[in-house]
Length: 456
View (cartoon, rainbow, N blue to C red):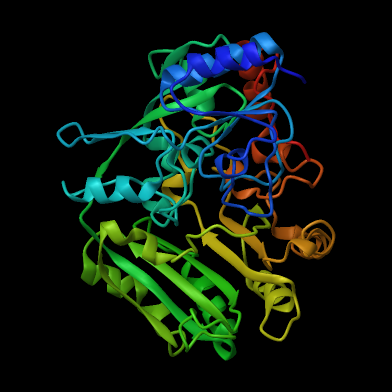
């Protein structure tokens, strides 16, 4: 679409933040995603510096007949934006804490790390994901399953309200008492309803927990997996755990004991008495001699160290799903496809234990998919974009078929990853939730100003 200089000047005059059009020198940096395999190239990008900027950008797009999409950190970017108007929200980085009320008000551009640090000063903690470099709003609108999920539930269960610019170009507050249908949808329904500019989030009293991670050499992968699978059959809700088979490249920045090796990482977090946490963890600690790592009392502010996910941008391909159960036959199959002696183009295959608080919805209900899942499985591809379109999907299809007896029919959107598989978007919610989300999108965005899902 062609825009006159006057039209663009009117948009630039209406917003405080920068405006870029395709071809401008600053556009590439403005729309860069965390996933460097995706290169966004919208017709227009607006770097929103305030909620009013978002309102002006949405009104401009509606008048011009342009679709609107949103970019914060870009962790969820799996398909390039090549048309319309892209609102970048990283300048919306406000953070307000009310320790007495145990509430944080978080701008849409903020990542988890500063929220965790600020809450810790008051003996409080947000219920976050495994990485503190992920954007708060994008994570929460997709539900969110972190290292404390079995104890506290989905992270979106702690959202108390959101400010949202809808297709009308006006901001509204979505909460249990104001726009309750929109509030229901945004706690797990992800996108397609408007542009979230901030979120009000409940914090929990938490200063420490018992947890950490251990790494075991390749020869112990089977014994660790079987011990963990047995552990999950009657693990208390106070304990959340996961395992991941990791294939480390021989790079110097990787700790020497792990460099160039295939290992299994065991992650554990227990909320409660540390002595009881040690007793609960004991069977896992005894599974095999650890190569590296520590499990003990940790400050709540160090929650990201449980998984120690990479924080920098890079090329990303992953596919996720939920599992209804695991058993000895599942472990056999998992080892057959991901074991140390297998040649697979994946750097990680991770299993997380769900259940507990994740299975219980909030009293007023929410759109989160996956409450009936018992485990997550995520396959993370080798960071080589030449493999992303053919090799990784083909191998992942074959592995998914092998694991079909244990795969849940529905998943949760934040764990779906690449949505190129037909039906994967629809499977992110139970059918009745998916249909209700579609109705709410039509209600708040009848002209489909905010297209969702992304192109596949």
